[in-house]
Length: 454
Image 1 (cartoon, rainbow, N blue to C red):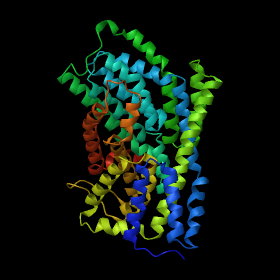
Image 2 (cartoon, rainbow, N blue to C red; image 1 turned 135 degrees about the horizontal axis):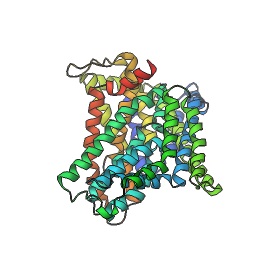
Image 3 (cartoon, one colour; image 1 turned 120 degrees about the horizontal axis):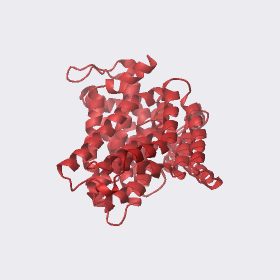
Image 4 (tube, helix red, strand yellow; image 1 turned 90 degrees about the vertical axis):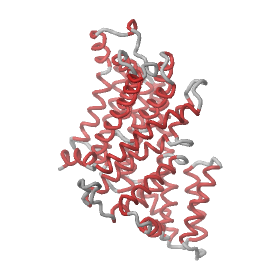
């Protein structure tokens, strides 16, 4: 029989020790799993020890999770084949005549890349290596250039096929297809807001984002030729998303189609080799292993907390604030942004969603400002997309937002960390506006799934 402890002290002990060990630089997967085993030994009993296999085995046998390595391999294959660099080159030549055209091209390329990649690390690094030198060479404002890359790169969290959406669906027992469809309009809305901001700033102050010199612009015929060269990878993205949205294939089957298609497209562009396949496979193995180890560790950690009354404790604490449903949602969103300063997206998902999602289901969402609310059956889907939009903010939140460090790792020396912090702030405001719109106008999330799934 384990030691007795009051749930308030257990909360402080579990999450306090988690924070201390993470700040010491230890890996999240082994910290959560290790702490879970320690607390199980100290405060558990023979029955609670059953939590170890009961939390891990369902994830090991979950069919939907097999989409993760497939989508990661698809992204890695397209990246290794040089198609991402080629795509940016095409888009910036198409838009180079606009003031702020390179920054807008960066966001559009990142939006398309998000539909190929599904994770933000690859997008931030790829666009940092390709787009940042191109903009600095043409005397773009450093903060505008960095901000466009930071914001565009975070779209990989939201726009399908998002790996976050797959994991959220598994943890919250939701439909991956519905989450993919629900994320389309919010993702395109945010992308459009980013583009309006960078182009608007550049037209107000042309020195921030000068247009390409006339001699570097290309003819309409050349533009058509360049777009034709990118038809295959774009058609691949449309095919993968199309078979999911139409219901022809499940997300896992679509991921298999995308993996085969990525090999085919790389071959078409004469970039397919055993070395390319080996590098893409290594990238997939590392990323998938990281995700699975975090899943195992965090699910045991949270499972032990919930079994000991943590769910009721958090629910009572939030309801006890007296703020009402939307006030409680605001507190959740603030907590998620704060967690994003210290944890990666997989850890936040597995620590927060099992606790927050059941609370959302118990509340009534009648709408704000007299606008339509959310029906109980739609709450899981709506919360899933609101959560994913919020995750973008957590990636950009100084001082420890992950996207900031991804970009710094590939930036030239003249781009300091202070520049990157300042670059993130306007786009954080835009993301907050996008989050507000998704909360106040839930039809932005629910309309498209309703049209497709009925």
